[in-house]
Amino acid sequence: MKNIFIAGITGSIGTQAIDIIRAFNNSFQLAGFTFHSNVKSAEKIINEFNPEFIIATLESSFLSLKTKFPEKNIYFGINECTKIIENQHFDIVLNAIVGAAGLPVTYSTVKNQKRLALANKESLVTAGEIIMPYAKKCEIIPVDSEHSAIFQCIQGENNNNIKKLWLTASGGPFLNSKKDFKDILPEEALKHPNWDMGAKISIDSATMMNKGLEVIEAYHLFNVDYENIFITVHPESIIHSMVEFTDGSFKAQLGATNMKGPIQLSFTYPERFPMKTYDFDIFKISKLNLLKPDFKKFSCLNLAFNAGKNGTSHCIALNASNEAAVEAFLKKHISFNQIPVVIEKAIEKYGDIKYSSIEHIITEHKNIYNCVKDSII
Image (tube, rainbow, N blue to C red):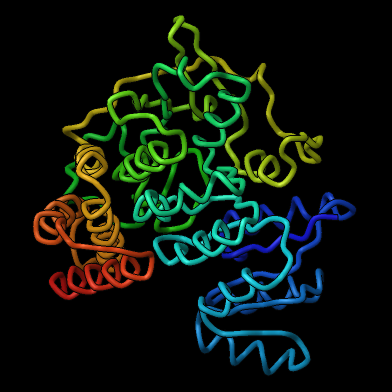
């Protein structure tokens, strides 16, 4: 029986992870979780799974839950989460927190040599050069479908034989849209054609910043230069990513457009458990398109590639300003086409910050986010 701790349990990744724990209740046990504001979902999870540790990252959520479950170990704040990860026995920590807020969980997990099921790409975007050296003493199993695909394709392969990584992108809701980007509304940008995701990642997919962040994540996870990481637009979202080898061979991983496969593999690796709710019928595939991305239309891609090549300080500014810009767009403070403009200006202004530790990165990221947010309002 493996003890699993889920950071960000009420989001899209967390709820799918719960389905897997429920399906394999003889193999996995939910030992603890974090949540932010969805108190009702947290209550249901406590009643069903009786986890030992619960951490609320919003004070009002903590107070509400503590009142209803006075006998439970309920704590407030991300710092309490990292202490629990450090001091308790968890076989696997699934980091499904959205944004740079998940960085402390990633760092605490790898530092304490626990298996990290990583669905929080921003951890590596902002601090990959500090985090990845710890991977020599622990397991980092990627949960993003693209990185899980590459992870699966390179098993048993010599890294020297990898020529290119190919990250597939759906293209989002505006791949073929002729609408002026300044007129796009948040409710339109939230309608992803293939994937059911949270608001922030849905907007990132619409701008294709999500794919840019995944490029930076792939650079750190697989130790492949940016010049050898490519993006192909694949509207069907059936091929989750590919690896091209020096002999001209390609390996690709295909699957359904949900995250249960990558999440389940991150729990079971190196084994593969039978999927209890298998919903992928290969005979329903009529065609698979692979297209070149439009870097001019989706300028966030260039911003991400350039930030990655310019190093961690640029990546911190990229990620912090993107989080602020996405939030501002959702609140209709800026237009859709202003998102990359805000990010580019922030990188120019804050891209040369100095950092020496994870704590410093967290502080600088928060400062940049607040400065960008204040400049928009």
